[in-house]
Image 1 (spheres, rainbow, N blue to C red):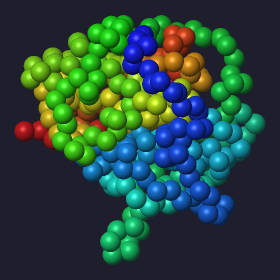
Image 2 (image 1 turned 135 degrees about the vertical axis):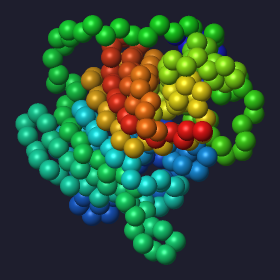
Image 3 (image 1 turned 45 degrees about the vertical axis):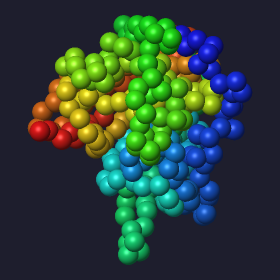
Image 4 (image 1 turned 45 degrees about the horizontal axis):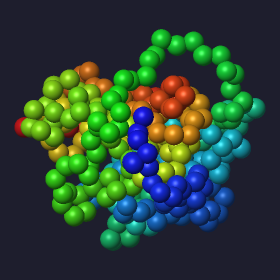
Length: 286
């Protein structure tokens, strides 16, 4: 697990952290929410897809009678940019244990045209009401201690503004998945890392939506470079995470036709599989 030296001196708390402030939505009318997308969660000029998912997830948590995301499926239609945005939600169905809703995020172009950036369909419930029975063959990834892993701070100084999100994460990558950074990608399509928020805020269901999409693309370990935009991302939240850092493992088994899939697992300090995801992403070949 990460060493004490990697922890912030003063820890932020759930509900009072930069992540909470930057994903907060303001209800303008029933089902309509305003937000100013923060530039702090960008890679180059693009807003991170996991951060966007958390924004829409927070709006749906307010719009639906249940507060915990169980499954969230998102289609990324156009690239989001920092600045004003509006989220519109619709309640599709409400039930005793699950409620389903959809949400879309819109931004205005310079000519005033409103453009849909991302559309989500999600089911929400109560994670604390789930039974304790677990039957699984899944095993958490084996990672070296964080002191033996590497983060963005261990590499060359980045170009200003190239990856603002890195300053907001505690990310320590397994050296076995860092060949791409040394010019010798393994070809295995794997990424593994210790993950947390830089201000020490513990994970909750909404921040798990960020965690599944916060590591470098597995395409890097396949020898590819450049932006790997998400086309579709589905996340399953399996239980409320225990306090402490998370272990994230992402794999790609098939790149074909300029698209690849990424399967992610997120494990908490208690050794529980707390989130799973699959996404389809586009890669630029050649």
